[in-house]
Amino acid sequence: MRDSAYEAYEKLRNGEASSQQITEEFLDRIDRVEERVHAFVSLTPGEARGAAAQVDTRLGGGEELSQVAGIPMAVKDVLCTRGVTTTCGSRMLQDFVPVYDATVIRRLKKMGLTMVGKANMDEFAMGSSTENSYFGPTRNPWDLDRVPGGSSGGSAAAVAAGEALWALGSDTGGSIRQPASFCGVVGLKPTYGLVSRYGLVAFASSLDQVGPITRSVRDSAILLQAIAGHDPCDSTSIQAEVPDYSAAMGDDIKGLRIGVPRELMDEGLSPGVRARIGEALDTLAGLGAEVEETSLDSLSYALSAYYMIAPAEASSNLARYDGVRYGFRIPGEDIWEMYAATRAAGFGDEVKRRIMLGTFALSAGYYDAYYGQAQKIRTLIVRDFQAAWERFDLLASPTAPTVAFRIGEKVDDPLSMYLSDVCTIPVNLAGIPAISLPCGLSDGMPVGLQLMGKVLDEVTILKAAYAFEQSVPSIGLPALEGSEA
Image (cartoon, rainbow, N blue to C red; front, side):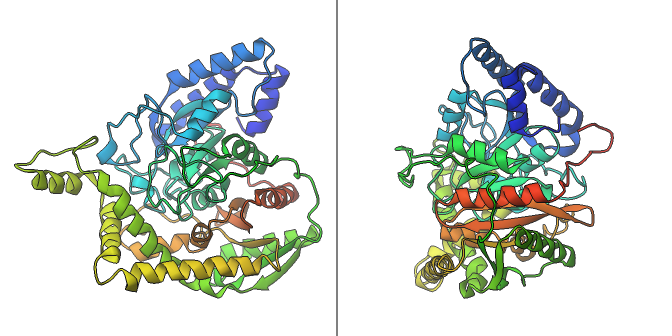
């Protein structure tokens, strides 16, 4: 089914289709393509069919349901789902079954969540390619020899491959937006604290945020509407009214001031990406926006600061996986031997690399020189964004400097891999919202345009993204040779 989630909802509401029919279409699609794409760690057809039947019963009784009800969804395997294995792509949690739902899952279940499976991901969300999963890599539906991006690569691939109409991902340094760019779909990273992190297995707590991956901008607005809002279970949750994110869609963007930070246009951009972004900026200008080059000097240091702050928080968060209370365990003659053996075998190479980097950054004698300095740079980045908002309503850049690279191409070059997120990382450090949306193809692969906005101004981002989306030809969805999308 090539419909958007919104179009599928309209069919449900008008009686043109049932949730059970739509769900069966997607379960059949999964049967046909999942072996090649490997978007999922686990599938939940029983749960999906049960939820779809309940939605049809409620609709049949005349109940007015949310726009997310009965529409097949993939959920990144970093979100706790009661009674369903939540692995975080790691051997450490390969058999972990939560006894509670993450807040976003609980809210969606009340609305009629139809979850078809838990999506594959880089282990503990640490990666840019979904090659770091204990359960094997996910492949990009546009080219099965290429990566889908990461760490929410399974979620983005599932949507692009037609295995789900939309998905939930998490974004610590670009993990929603970069795979959305690579897979030719829409990915929205909300303002930090807008969406509850309760039940999201932590990587870097001051950076992590849950958000939607969808086929259209309208779908992103609908799903964000469903999951946003204050949660007393999350101490970082913002107490702010949730606006109608779809209300401004269709409004023109004449006079909207859009800045283009030159620091994000110079970081190893491929010629094809540079060309597509230039065309996208021309389109925005053609719609009446005032597009102007600008500079945020501190962005040049964002990548370095991120790879001090995020690993430091990861080393603290992942200390709980010691084989004592839950998760994977290798017995030892004493507790220290058990700790060492469990963590050596339970974590993959990239997770170990980041734990060691973070532990070093926090160690005595190095804390001020590394972690402390990184936090100072973070403050400068926040200030630079605040200064930019005095002149601009939005900032625009590529989502990623290249299109999706080939599987195995960067696994032995961590720095090259880390540079895949150079355009997305500043957004997480500043806690602001941003969206990635398709803006064309380069060498047959999708290119993503990133729009960044002020804290809690998702409405403006979505308005501009929708105006852009409606003004350019759709790149469509990959055909996946040998199957129908």
